[in-house]
Amino acid sequence: MATQDHTASAAEILEPSPMAQMRRRVFGHYGIIIGGAVLAIIFAIAIFAPLLTPFDPILDQDLAQKLKPPFWHDSPKYDPAHPLGTDLQGRDYLTRLVHGARISLLIGFSAMIISGVIGTALGVAAGYFGGRVDMIVNFIITTRLSMPVVLVALAVVSLIGSSLWIVIWVLGLLIWDRFAVVMRSTTMQVRNLDYVAAAQACGCSTFRIILTEIMPNVVNHLIVVATLEMAHAILLEAALSFLGLGVQPPAPSWGLMISEAKGMMFFDAWLIGIPGAALFALILSINLLGDGVRDVTAPENRN
Image (cartoon, rainbow, N blue to C red; front, side):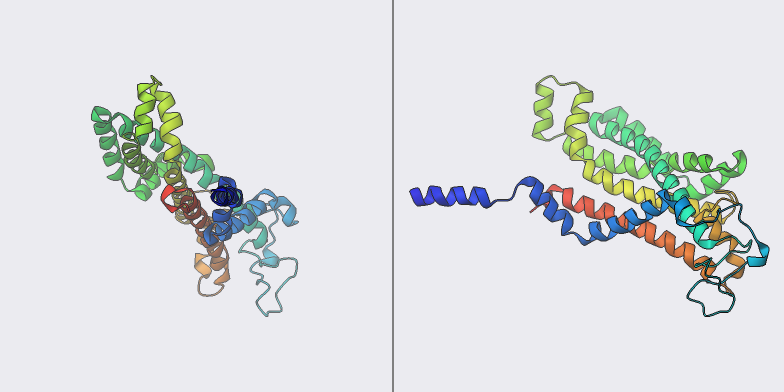
């Protein structure tokens, strides 16, 4: 008996704490490590953009310095002052690239917050209350899904004009449907569990039940949708800017940089490749991080 008690005590001592288990899952997930590292680098670049280059992304134009090649081109035209070359107006491409990270992150994060608030509120309300509320929300979701996002965004922006905040609000008001669908289905699953019934039996208010019982148990799904929609918003902004109806020149938007360089695609492909690679890295890192966070927070995936 003493040996059994001693073995049990040793097992309790050696068993890692929940925080240690969470750290092990986080640092053992390559998606979180790679995605988080790349995203952190891009965030740092966006925050410290004015300190990274000596040029202004808009005002420092010199047509005599236009189309300088980047550092990997073996060309006598290369200028060490412009390691990524210059664009058609002679502006430093590295400067415009690092300042473009600010625009992409601002649009992606802001549009995700707006759409997340709308979609989560509708989805949780439909999933928790059901009945007529669910029917009305389903009708709203179906109506939204019947409208193509890009065409509606193009129409709205062309009618009311285009600016950074107009693009943010248009995208935020158009991409909430995935939040609503996912939150509705997960809330319907959670609302029938025992702890929700116990909270209702104790007389807790509806708001408290949703806030303390429902939301903590659907947050991992919310994180995945949020990362997907953030990446979606960044891509949509790039598409609108490429078509000339997103962020307007001379702002250093990555989509606008690609649009301005499309005429040089077969001559100086790096003008498109550099902002395109930046977009790829940003969106891939967001998706990797979101999937990784979902994996380590999902109850069925915990060790």
